[in-house]
Image (cartoon, rainbow, N blue to C red; front, side, top):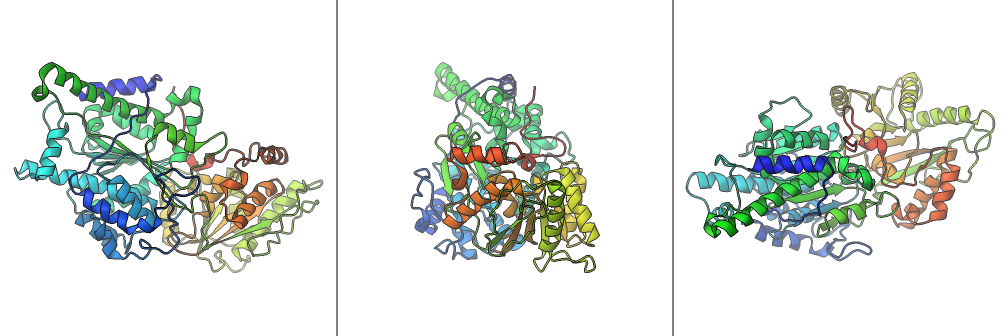
Length: 592
């Protein structure tokens, strides 16, 4: 019956069926109450409401000292997670202490009264572990209860949990829980899958991680406990394995949620987007099974009724959740998950203090030969809006090439490329610009490689491995590398072309200064970038966060639109088109 229910829900989603969002908890066993109380005590000092944030959003700044910031390895244990996870996170992954966002997210997700959760905080603070650890802990608790039940020694709480929920398919076979992790591109799916596999190694769920972008047997989907991929891949998996997968899903994570929901702002076409289809299908499947259980109870009495389905939890994760503009991600999240608990940092939409950002103006002196004379104090000169004279475009490009070399601190005869900053990540807006930057780097003798949607996924993985091993000094990318990728060796980010919007800028510069390390970002600002760059600088100088600099001033928006040669640059704060591109399939691409 479960297969028919899910198949019907998926068909309804794909033809545009509408349903109000269902918010429900995900109970992971009897253990969480004590650990939640302990976790709340650890971060109590950071729980004061933040101005403009939801009533239950915390205000902890993950860069500030506090009770949680002083945590050591014992604080991992204090969360109450499974010992196998504790050993993996400390011993295998080498994280001696949790970050405040990880402490607070663990408490929110594993709360016995758990509901949907939004994890929102600046880049580089450990959000992947913040959602993986509590989600995997819940699966391990459930698996332990199932094993004990099979041996006839189930603890009272686990037994009660088994009796209260439908854990078997139509054939009576036991179903264990599953976690879905939606990513905007294959590269992030590979990265998160590697972390999940490391955490589960040696546990009862060892080998249960499936990256849907890797070759796999058909039956592997129904056996997996953690499935990762873009929304189209996960939607296809649900269609093909309705009976064995749908009822097992306990939690669905939307990592880089604002990118995944990029198509949700087109109300008329919303039901065509795979992420919306998948969320709707999961909700409808739960509702249909709940109705079936209720109907059975009414017809046969309580003893003959089917148990209700286990509740479904959604976790949304992101470094940017814009609340203004035509793509208001915050409004869409509130619409989908109105009762979600927010775990939010005070540093959201800000740049961490340990990151030195420098704006270097190029080609703005009227003749197109800009001097690129950033003053090194994070301010830049930013005094002109000049369009350049005749031949100004060529002059700007020459200045851009020279500024790239200067930012790298290289000469054609030194073969360096790091300027003392470690490895460098260079961003461009277009594929031709990536090629141009690579030509400049080749002339300088710098070991570099491209990273963009036209490079096959297998080659991108190899490039990232070479970069991580130090074989490449520079990676030149479109926005594909801006979101989520953890590249610890990157000490310097260069915007060869300035970001087209605020959100993209935040994600780009967020590839360095991660995990409490220092970093540097050099942003080359052309004549058409001047207004957006000044707005970002103003937000940094005022300490109000970047989004506030351009969120509500309509006259600024109109002036920026007139002065920018790139239509709409910086106006739609949540749009990061290159950041959600994927070689084979775009997670925001509609079907039908």
